[in-house]
Length: 133
Image (tube, rainbow, N blue to C red):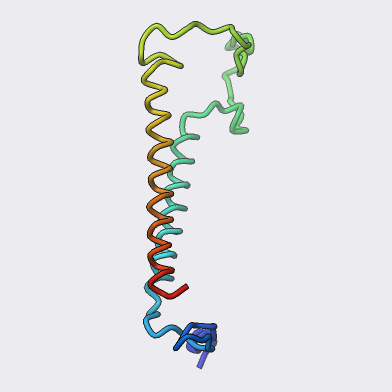
């Protein structure tokens, strides 16, 4: 029998005390679900990274551009990556940068994140109470 065939000894609560063994209801579903969630997250991260670099500037990605002999290219002045303070324009429309819609989206993202954290906390509290912790 290989190492994988043997159960991993753990401290599990039974009858109000901790004993070495496996929980009676542990059929590996939690580990399978955790593995699938991690796999899905890694796939999503890889897909988003490839989408972001698809239209990237070759100078940024480290690729070299080849030009035909005799062709002339004009050098553009370097653009400022970060604008100077107070150099922009005030928003005139709700959809402009810094406008009302951008603020609403930010508040909704914060509220959604807070709601998710609250639901996770509530469910973990229920699970701990059900297990007697």
